[in-house]
Length: 223
Image (cartoon, rainbow, N blue to C red; front, side):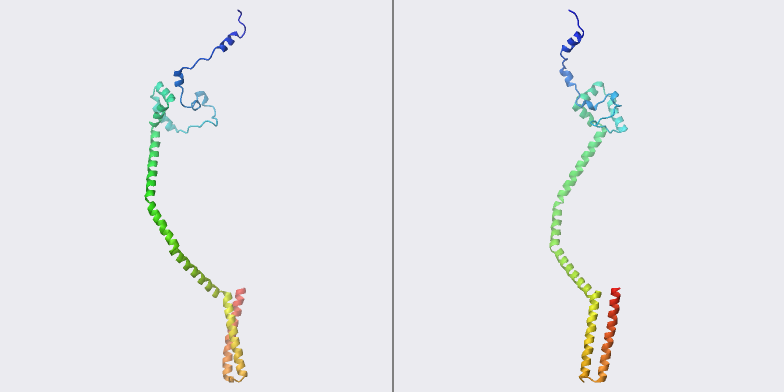
């Protein structure tokens, strides 16, 4: 038979793909292949799906110190056996320090929680006392404060400029009425001339003094 072009390729394509043995399947790494990059791919920019490892040079040197004495089989086991990798990770000093800090924080948090629970009865007692104070002593103090506020308002109204001017005006009117009443008595011959002059002069002096004070206070208030 003659071999035509592409007959060998067609025969190669018709062969079934090689089967993967169970041993090769068991050696598949447990981690994601995307987490390990080849040396040629280290210069490639990272995509959004990759998370860079923020490891300081000192920490990296410490990890390398642990790994440099391991054999190839041990390194392969770390990559293929998740339990072995976890055990190696927990043996690192950095991880031990972090676990110790985490455990210490957990103990301190539990201690604070226990102390808060022990103080709960005292807190409830203080709340009850505050409630009693609000309903009794505070209510009495509030009532007294309101009374003092009312007294203050009354005093301010009594001694306000407008109130003082009104009272001064009332005093002027009262003296003026007394002067007119005295004058009527004099006209009706109920009082002699000497007594009338003395009393009338005194009343009019008081009236004019108050009138001047009223005028000066009113002028200063308006200004």
